[in-house]
Amino acid sequence: MSPLWLARPGGSPDVQNGDPAPLGSFSNPYGPWDPSGTASPKPWSFWQYGTSSVPGMEIGTDLDVAHGDLNYVSSFLIPTVTWKGNGANNNWSNNANWNPNQPLNHDTVVFGSSPQTNIRADFSSYPDTDPQRFNQPALHLESVTFAAGAPSRSIELYTSAETSTFYQANLTFDGAGVSNSSAVEQTFVVDKGSLRALAGGQYTGVDGSTLTFNNSASAGTNVTYEAKGGLTTFFFEPGRNYPIPSPVCGLDHFQ
Image 1 (cartoon, helix red, strand yellow):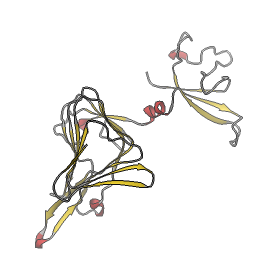
Image 2: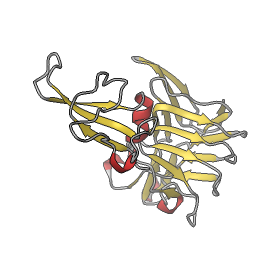
Image 3: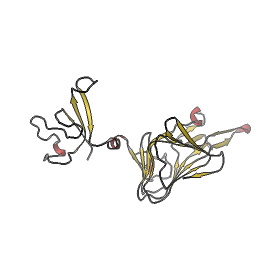
Image 4: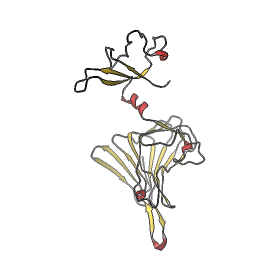
């Protein structure tokens, strides 16, 4: 059932913990969601009510109550995107691999027991004539979860300057971070920079991709991070930066 958002006037003795009260001749305000009026708990998800007694606010303010804590609220407000792996390739940018579509900023991402276990995270690309190709904006996710029963996966934060399109997958976690509920190891690969030769002995290229964990975002357990010349940064607390640098060439491996 879709979440029920119930708009009712005041009247409940405990708006923080109670249920919206009946009004007038309406003994059951939930209608078809609770035809008998006896459902427990009541079927509402959110309740909006009016009040005239909020200190510091104007009379007639509408307030909202959720049938749970902040995590309950976030489950409705932060969309979850699931990897289906049904596309003709393993590219992150292929919408056919996702339900409903490839992730956007502030989404949560789940990898379950679906095909395509080697994923090329090519979610950011700019033509080689665009000034922003050298420093492409990050994709900000709340979290990535490897669900119970998920196979071992490798997610490559893809970098390339080999064609007229530059790729640089900068990924940032702003919420819970990475969680591995599967029984197998999961892997993130941070690509190194890429070069392409031009006429006259000149070169063009792009720096390696980056992976950033902000605030208290977790790197998870049984998760391996391979930095091929990129940069992984953990921001454990405001104002402090904990970089884990990698060489221009070669491979760093840490867990």
